[in-house]
Image 1 (cartoon, rainbow, N blue to C red):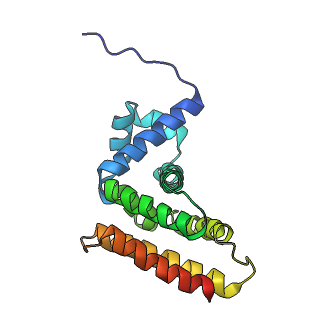
Image 2 (image 1 turned 45 degrees about the horizontal axis):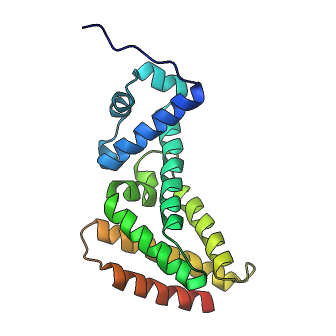
Image 3 (image 1 turned 90 degrees about the horizontal axis):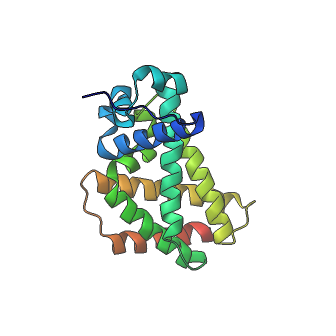
Length: 190
């Protein structure tokens, strides 16, 4: 049987395919089990071609982390409706549901430094974006230091709660959402 014919794709499309393959591998495996050999196999390419597009594992993982983070944010925003706290409630529910369906992905997002060197601070960047969004959605004063600290504490609470759930701690969606909203109301009013 002759080998499968290779298809030509643009460099941009090939990079997208590599990132999609990396995301699929992250979604199926815990981060400590992910390696570039598995990613190359998933993408159907050689290791040499993978390294042509990404000079090292770290560059690939950083690009994949950014893609994963966009996927999570997109899922949360797609599930969100209403304004103010209704928006936050619906996006929290969407996040909880996403974490339930994609636990390995969410672990990577919440603990990126455990995946690869160079990802330190990536979750902080994502939380900064979320704090900016919450400030706007909740009509908070962007110059209020107490509100800013409260939002970051709230985001840490949400992250810790989701990680606990993914580690086996029972967490009911409605109770989580109600508690998170109470904590956010307190943080936003400080």
